[in-house]
Image (tube, rainbow, N blue to C red; front, side, top):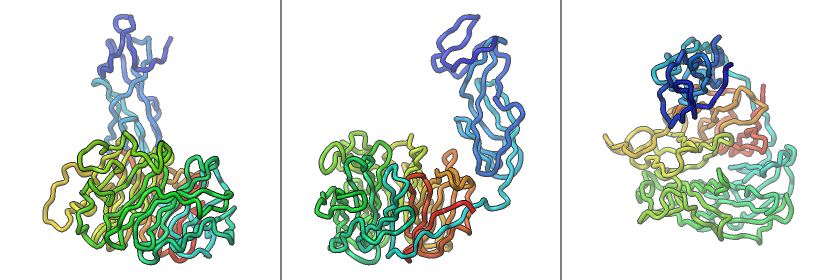
Length: 467
């Protein structure tokens, strides 16, 4: 009889012994088998998980975690967990190895010649300088759109309501990169009614403020509680995104303080909140508590609020709702725009390089050291645009061809591109002509169902749909 066991025990001379974390196979071993004997077929950009077992003395089949390699990674790549990704059309073999005992399976990758099906559906063009949109947790009917001038509008079932959800236009600065920049719903919004907004006030100071609501479509301006205030030495590079991430923590993006080239050295200075993404616990104290597991807690001269640093202007960042990975669109200086990806397993503490680096190049120097720096997974030059607009990993259900792809754009060029983050790299990069709304892309948005939207500064909001 064949039995299946996890690799926590193995047979030795007919008895069961603890595995003790060994990577050597038990003896005697007949073979290692990848559980896809007839081969694997998948499309470009698609994934599938392989597993393997050891056949031990014809009596037991033991489930193991072997090492995985692809003979031609440019056709299909494979992670250490056996997740295979189709990269380009062609044929290869994926090999499993456990203590020198191997097996392989043929992999055929098809497709990739035609652009998958996706397009834009315009929901409204009646907004005024929209820069962000967000949905309440678990609410599939509403999307709240942030207008740079200081108002938040409500879309209910794709209909733009006349009354504003929130109007703080008398409290915000106007023009350029300043204004009301984003909003986030507390994960328990349905019960506590809390929303958090990020804006620059009338003297240019970055503020994060919490508001309560009078009803689900009306915030109470008198309920304001200031959570964070950060002085800005210049009018640009304010960052401005607030969003809740894994564990219910509030993440706040701040640029390097502005001007050009980071003249005050904020990007590499852990003693300032500027040039960083912060991680705050807004539930454990008022206005917030620094989480004990933040990476710089207790470090002399460092601000404990910092989660990652070395950023020039993280205008838009997001968490993959399925995996928890953090994707950051960091606006470049004069040459390169970049996308950084930090896995959920990696935690915080990353130094993303600015102003030692701009993208993968030394900034303002012939040579530089990249020791201790986390470099971007994707970048493009100013021949392709001027200012990156970070987006989302698509996890909706309406557009299957986008599943698992990270979408992003450029404010000046207006194209939409994507890649799949796989094995620590950006693969299967492509451009989507049918998703381009033209110049002025300020933000992407994700509704409660995981469907993705595109906003333009000209007043338009589009939903990405299946063609």
